[in-house]
Image (tube, rainbow, N blue to C red; front, top):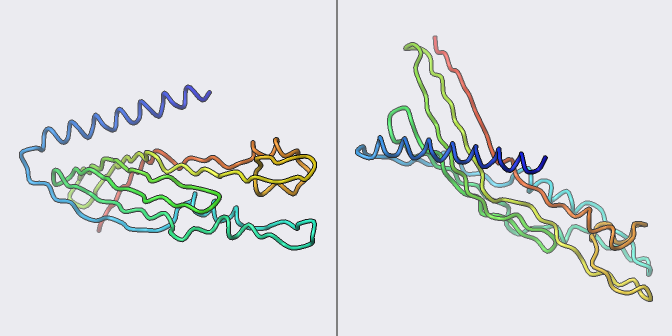
Length: 192
């Protein structure tokens, strides 16, 4: 099942790059303009990482250890998107994400590539299609070293170290997530 997903992702990216190359070669003689489309901080993966900081556990001595400090980033993943217009109705969407990091997780930087085109079925309407692909931007949670006294020291999932799960079993619950890698938008606008 995983192999089919990788093949499909690879074919989608190849088709996207082919479209970009075809448009670029036909419009090479024209002057291109680039515009800033969007700047925003945060993403669904940023929200998920921040949610990992909820809770904590109590030590044997009775003192409370909060997860907040482990999952608090000083910089939130920032995304900057541009549109390079290559014809009046066609453009290349591109941009990047800076990534984000805290003591117990990391969101990798990302790169966005895409294509936008529009047609005018009649003078009062516009049909537009855009396809974008995200490369990178994965969220990876880091383990902790926990000292279990006479039982030894183990690499564990920080959030589950004080639970009843065996230390070595907690590692399979570390978060390892990818962002949505492909977006397709189809829009029809009619003015009257």
